Image (cartoon, rainbow, N blue to C red; front, side, top):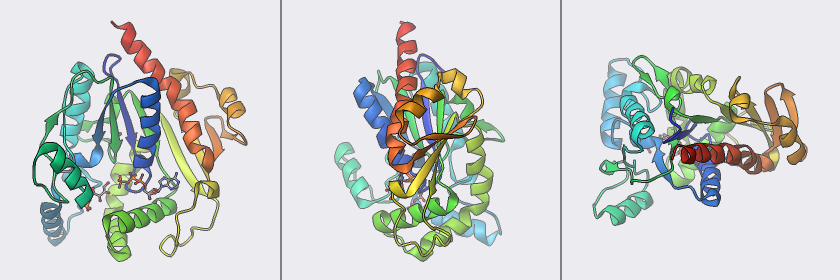
Length: 300
Ligand SMILES: Nc1ncnc2c1ncn2[C@@H]1O[C@H](COP(=O)(O)OP(=O)(O)OP(=O)(O)O)[C@@H](O)[C@H]1O
Ligand SMILES: O=C(CO)[C@H](O)[C@H](O)COP(=O)(O)O
């Protein structure tokens, strides 16, 4: 935890919507004149795409569980080191995992290299003078044998649609943007299930705030759903961890007054219409980020 170099992490499974939430944070940073050091969680995978396929086949042959959700396929020690070193000094290293030809072209042009989809860019120093570290990915709140990333985040936000919706979102996104077949995506979801339960779900007990999208249309068979339920076809449950409300000065009455049709579903949860998710995020997160930066400035 660091007041001088705060670490903000958005954590969620593949397809949960963390990239979408990242955009809400980018609006806040732009409006508040904040320069973040942005880090993508997938860059902490251990293997490039081809070696990952080989490692997966080897693990399968040995009858072992292995997936992008678990510790064997990721560099949790390196991620922990980044959160720690940024918190202490405002410095650290980052890289990118290139999912597509478009992403590869963008970074090839920037770095003058010739990489392809499924490869990492070389590690590079985070630019000096950033205001905070912003992590978005699968593992911002992991904690286990020999690693504890969660405790190094100053603000940890979970993005967690109910599972059926998360799968629908993943199937659509991986198909439309990454070119995978529906069958291949369902195989991936199945293979990752033990690691989902052991390494993704526990993170949402560590988060300060969780945003859980719940559809109001029938998604009982997510594998035949043709469309992602729209924001208007969903509610978002916003849950504050015990202590987070006091820590960040969250005023439920203010939120209930400001967000039309919102209501409390428990002493620590507020429910908003899906279309109000971005607005609710900005209302809740802007004062938190603002306060972080004020406290940083007060240190001189
Ligand atoms: N609140 C939302 N309302 C409607 N659609 C959404 C919402 N959040 C995410 N989606 C859709 O779900 C899909 C997955 O979202 P996104 O790419 O943000 O996931 P992700 O968590 O970043 O996944 P990954 O970590 O695998 O990159 C996208 O097609 C996106 O448009
Ligand atoms: O969404 C993911 C994790 O968040 C991807 O599955 C992971 O990054 C690997 O990608 P690919 O299988 O396309 O190489």
